[in-house]
View 1 (cartoon, rainbow, N blue to C red):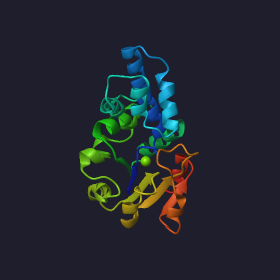
View 2: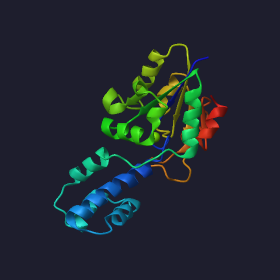
View 3: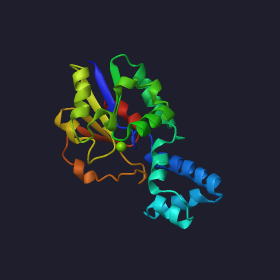
View 4: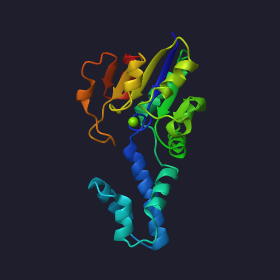
Length: 219
Ligand SMILES: [Mg+2]
């Protein structure tokens, strides 16, 4: 039977904290070279860990003549230095080689940001571009069912799978649509959005895995 396996991006195919670190590095390099400052990156990471408004704090602390919006624009549009871990690369490679499996991405975010991530991670080797559904470009974001229906309309009579991490928004629509859902568990409070596992009690079509290699048990 034909199978359609759709992945979330952030905190599913890579850890979003790595994107944050990459963006902070880009911003700190800019500030250090432009305004002759030091140890900006360390300051920004300490703000993030303390739950403070990093961009407002760095502008205030170093008396910079730039706006928060400008730093946000660097954050969102920079070319990230991020990569797939070995397990994820192996899983995508193996799945992409199987003739009866079609792969896709359904992710929320800005077009420029999510496209830059996908390219930087090399996911374009495994998943064709017309199967990248990015909410800003597509016009709907999760938990809307529209993104999932895009794949259902494209592939008739297939078995559908969604792999994500966000229990609040990733699985509501695909569970209603009868997809098999697989939640990648946070490997130690690294995820940007925390997981509340009490939400998933008694949902028979939602499974959890500790790493993506476990996916093969369910596909
Ligand atoms: Mg996610």
